[in-house]
Structures are given as structure tokens and as C-alpha cells.
Image 1: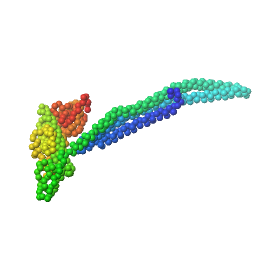
Image 2 (image 1 turned 30 degrees about the horizontal axis):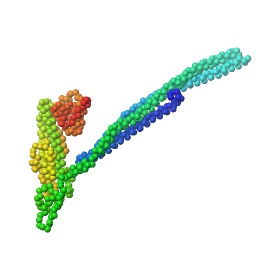
Image 3 (image 1 turned 180 degrees about the vertical axis):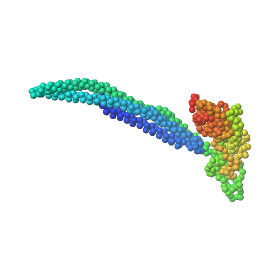
Image 4 (image 1 turned 135 degrees about the horizontal axis):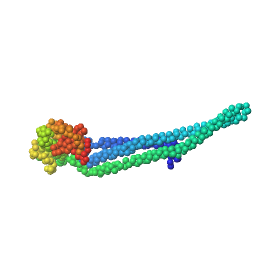
Amino acid sequence: MSWGSELWDQFDNLEKHTQWGIEYLEKYTKFVKERSEIETNYAKQIRNLSKKYQPKKNSREEDESKYTFCRAFLTTLNELNDYAGQHEVIAENLTSQIIAELTRYLQELKTERKSHFHDGRKAQQHIESSWKQLESCKRKFERDCKEADRAQQYFEKMDADINVTKADVEKARQQAQMRHQMAADSKSDYSSYLQKFNQEQNEHYFTVIPNIFQQLQDMEEKRIERIGVCMKTFADVDRQVLPIVGKCLDGMTKAAESIEPKTDSKQVVESYKSGFEPPGDVEFEDYGQAMKRTASETSLSNTREGKEKPTTKTKGKLWPFIKNKNKGSGPEDFSHLPPEQRRKKLQGKLDELNKDIQKEMDQRDALTKMKDVYVKNPQMGDPTSVDPRLSEIGQNIEKLQFEVQKFEGWLAEVEERMPSKSDSHRRSGLYETQNSTTVGNNCAQDRESPDGSYTEEQNSETQVKANINPTPPTNPTSTTPEFDDEFDDEEVLPTIGTCKALYPFEGHNEGTIAVAEGELLYVIEEDKGDGWTRVRRNEDEEGYVPTSYVEVFLETNAKDS
């Protein structure tokens, strides 16, 4: 049904209805906006929750990672974080696909509605003005007819009166004729304007107004259609993330199914096994005879030598009843720990030292390549400037290798004393240069107290502390080779990838650039075999960094920075 034909006389009601339709669309837009804010806040709260329960950066984190249920919980937290990301996607899509579109459409809708009703009011004003003019012509015609009748009556009266002169009668007759003529003219004008008004009124109610109302009807139907599309999009935005949400939930389920109680219970044994054998029967000691107390060979003793020990006033305690008084990290050789736990700690320390040695060697190789480049291209820098840094790295490697030998000696000592000796593969022999047993005899001493228990004391040789965490390369300062700044005048190079700084680099020399550990940079030139990579931080900052200091991610298609 058409508004133009059915609602030709409902201009005011249509104006109110279309205004209500716009307000309703604004209300729906506000609803979607609030839903988007809820999704954003929910995602933020979920992320904060996931972050709150992430393992802390301490020694306990390493212990937790050994158990399957702890790893499953960590996986659940990571999946929950991804799950929060999908709610952020919902909020972003609601904003871009509905809120932004409806905001723009509302402005267009208001402008279009205003234009249509402006045309409608203009048409109404025109027809009302024509009606007023028609009424004016009608009243004039009525007045002229009445005046003509009065003039005719006056003439007839004067003509019948014998006392009136001929001149007066003639004058009255002419006045009557003039009034009749005026009435005739008014009648003609009224008839003509009436015909014109009827045409305009017909055009107004059958053409102009129907067209305007039809445009309003089309506008209203488009508005209703648009709100329907938005409601469908509202549901589709949620539906689009369901596959990924399902994967997150599947990941949580898989993590829960990966929990292995038996494995975790075995891990408790691995974590706390001391390596000692249970104590044997305590022998009866007859104090009625003058004799020295002897330590029972069946009591818990790591020496197993069966030698008699002098009796002291303070009787030694067996290992299971000794309380560890060391609240800190303990001595360097971990002698405060039971044999099994000490062996694991020493092995872990050896692995860390070997990694540090490998890093130092990588740096040495990179600096050696750079020195070769300087020798071939003196304009790039002074080859001798690299020598102090190479010497420093060599000293670092020697120190680390000494630490390796020291810890290998302690490890050998522990393995010899354990009830079941471990295989030789427990040791890391990647960088062995000397006989570890010799160093072990020099670096470690017997940690047993006279009664067979482990003592809390440590010898003077364990006062030298080794770095437990991997040591990043020392920042080159004045020893870093200098680059010339020829590339400052070159055309800006496009980026060919990105890189992440593994270690801090001070970059004091000309042509280099300082970077912080973990910093992300753009790669503009690959390592050409000289051990240096050219990077850019922004439009004004670029330079060379050692290739061994960064992890490079090259892109398939290079992009300008």
C-alpha cells in the first residue's frame, strides 16, 4: 500500500512517525555500542585474570613446570588469553560493521528526511496560498454582485421618481451599468482562478504529495531494512569467532586430558629423592665397658669405610632428621643438598655454562668476520679496534671453561659417592680440555661430617660464585669497529624484514646503532658475510648491529618503513 494514496492527509503523523523511526535507530545504535563496551571490558578482565595466575618469575616456576597438571593449567591460561582476544574481535567488528555504519547512515537519513518534509511544507504552503487567493476572488465577486444589485435598485428608484431630473436618472443608470460590469469582471476572475486552483489542488493531492510521501515511504523501508541487516550482522559477528573459540575450548580440554597423575607422582620422587640408602639397625653400645663409641657400619654413612670415629659429646644426626639451615641459594657446589638433588643441580649448571660458552664463541666468530671486513675495506673501520674485544671474549671463554671443569669435578665426586654410579654420559664434555677428575680433586673436598651426615660448612674454594643465568655478550664500546657514514647520503632503503635484539648493544662507534635487549627493529640490509646487519629504528635512526646480537625474520615482500 502506498502512503501517497492512503495517507494523503496525514502529513503531521508521518512526520512524527519518521522522527520516531530515526530515534529508534539511534537507540539500537546505542545498544550495540554498549554491547561492544561490555565485550571490551570482558576481554580486558579475562586477560587480567589470565595474567594474574601466570607463573611468577622465580625458582618455583621451574618446579611447577615439571608437573603435568601445572603445565595443563598454564595451557588453559594461554587458551583463555586467546579466548579473550576473540571477544576483542567481536567488539572491533561490532564497532566497524554496525556502529560506524549506522552512525553514518543516521546522518544521511536525517538529511534526506529533512529535505522531503521541506518539500512537503513548501507544497502545502503553496496550496494554502492559492486557497486564500481563491477566497479573496470569491469575496470580491460577492461584493461586486451586491454593489451591482444596490446600484440597479437605486437606478430603478430614481427612474420611477417624477421629481428627479433626467440627468440624475442618467447618472444612476450609468452607475448601475458600471457596477454590473464590475460584477461580471469579478465573476470572470473568480471563475478563472477557481479553475486554476482546482488544477493546482488536483496536482497537489494526486501528484506532488504522493511523490513526497512515496519518497518518505522508500526512506522508511530502507531504514527498516538496514536495521534488519544490522541485526543479522550482530549475530554473524559472534558466529564468526565460534570456530576459534571452539579451538580455545578444545585446547583447554586437551590440556586437561594430558594430565597424568602417575607421571606427576613419579616427578615427586625425582624432585625429592636424596640418593641415600635407608639407615640400618643401630648396634647396641655397652657403656658398662670402657670402650670408645664406634659409628655403626650399618648406620647412614656416605664414606662406607667402616673406620671407627672418636666419640664426641654431640652425637651426629642421621640425614633424614637434619633440617636445612640454608634458606638462600646455598654454597656454589650445592653441597647442602642430598646427592641426587646435588647431581641434578650440578648438571643443570653445566648445561648453562656450556650455553654461555657457545654464545661467547658466536660473538667471537662474528667479530672475527667483522675484522676481516675491516682488513679488506679499511674505510669501514680500524681492524685493530676489534682486538681488545676479541681478547676480552677469549678471557671470558677461558673463565667459563674453568667453571665447567670445576663443576664437572664436583659432579664426578657426587656420582662416585652415590650408591649407584651414574653413567659417564651425565657429564657434558663439549668443552672439556683437561682431566676433570684432577680439577675435581683440587676444587672439591669431602662434605661429610665425622658422623656421616652432610655438613652445612663450605670450603674456601666455593666462595667464587658463578653466574647461574646465561650471560649476554658484553656491550662493545670503544673496541667496536667504526663504520663510516657514507650511507647517510644514500636513498632510504626499503625494509626487508624485522629483527629482535637478543642482547643489548651500545653502538658507540660511527655507523653503528645502539639497541636494547628485546627491542624490535626493521632490517634494511642482510648480513653480507661480514657479521653485521643493517637495521632501522625510524626514519632518522639506522645503522649496523652484530648479526649474532639479533634474531632476524625476513619477509617475502619488502615494505618501505
